Length: 174
Image (tube, rainbow, N blue to C red):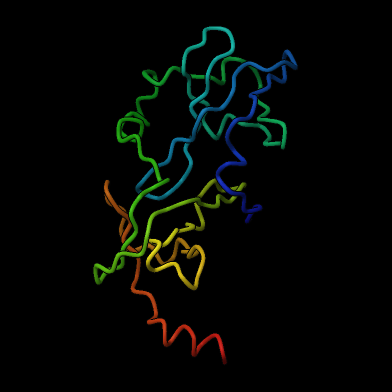
């Protein structure tokens, strides 16, 4: 089942609320992205009590609301050192924002300026790529679907070749 698509900023700067105490227990700092499949595995959170950075796993979230995340209780927050299965992903510390995007043919497309996440699966579905200024005279950001991604490396995202501008304009007229 597909959920709604939200920009990544929707998921950040939210409170984590305990269902047990009905109070905020942490605030979300940033997401943990698995670069192998572009899935949000969890979120780094600042614990309201210890002030430590903890991890909230996606599977421990009962509900995502505009105001915050609902979890059962404070035990949903886990010390990153205790996450053995996610240790490799955490150590990679993958960040999409600002990542270079180029085609299989090595054409430079731009840099990731934003991305959209499916709220039910937590998979990143779309990348918004800001083109360099000299290529950005006519068009705004380019939207890349996850099915167009060919490879993800530590330094860049490689996508399938784009249509030539002449073909894009011809397709737009049809």
